[in-house]
Picture 1 (cartoon, rainbow, N blue to C red):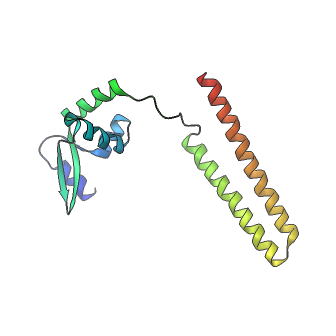
Picture 2 (tube, rainbow, N blue to C red; picture 1 turned 30 degrees about the vertical axis):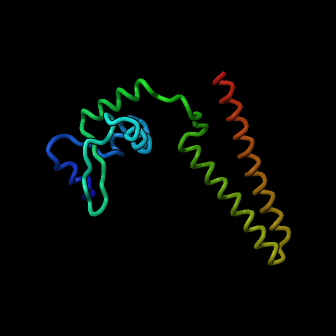
Picture 3 (cartoon, helix red, strand yellow; picture 1 turned 180 degrees about the horizontal axis):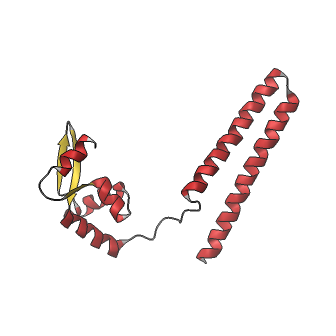
Amino acid sequence: MPKIVAQVRSMPGEFFLRAEVADALDVSSATLRRLATRSTLLVPTTSVMTGMLAVPVYDAETVARLHAHLAEHRSPRGRPRLWSDAERSARRAAHSTAGYRRRRAVALRERGDHAGAKRMLVDAEQISTALQCGYRDRQQQSRTCRA
């Protein structure tokens, strides 16, 4: 257990770190920081010093106020995610593979293996095209679902 977490857990009462509150309320830590600047009712209960760093902590009452505020003021901004975490990971890997094949093509061309370089470029282009088509399809599918 990290030292700061142990320090917060040893405090009398029930206190939570900002990241824990953000996870529980399904918002980002930045949102909680922004809310604290807008209302004195939504500021952290106290701060715990760890060295020269002040770590904000919230008590259960403040968390309840934040929950009530967010229930009334949820912003519909932002766009829905097109990809699940697993899909994003697979797409990142595919982009990485395409980049590798392009770099490999340059190295092969420099060594005089023009046929190998062409194969690598064709593979990279196929991967990139598949990624672009998948993006267009998913984006179009998302638009029809929202309409």
